Amino acid sequence: MTDQIVGEVRKSARESIRLTLREKRGDVGLDLRIAAANGRGVMCETPKGLRVPVARISELIRALQEAQGMAGSNAQVARPSASGEDT
Image (cartoon, rainbow, N blue to C red; front, top):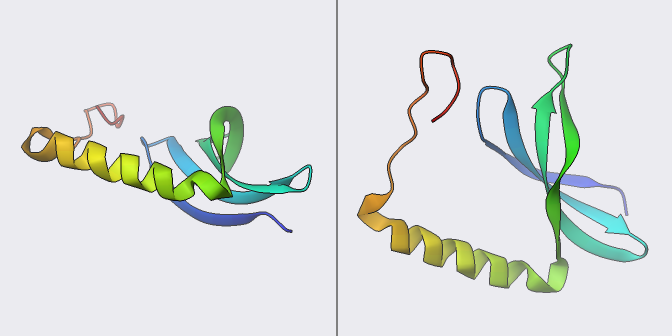
């Protein structure tokens, strides 16, 4: 299987969380890796991240939805600071 980028979630002006379906040693998993701008401004994956087995993706989705519900009205939209970094 060829790596398939599923999406990216912006973390800050220079970083995002990249979601990639990737096969490793015969097993397909969902990699969530930090992608950061290199010296040329190109977003490259860093080693920082985690791998979720495909069979566990629905559990991850449920946990994220629960976290979103628990945050409820406490969740605030992050506003960029003067330096361009998200807070």
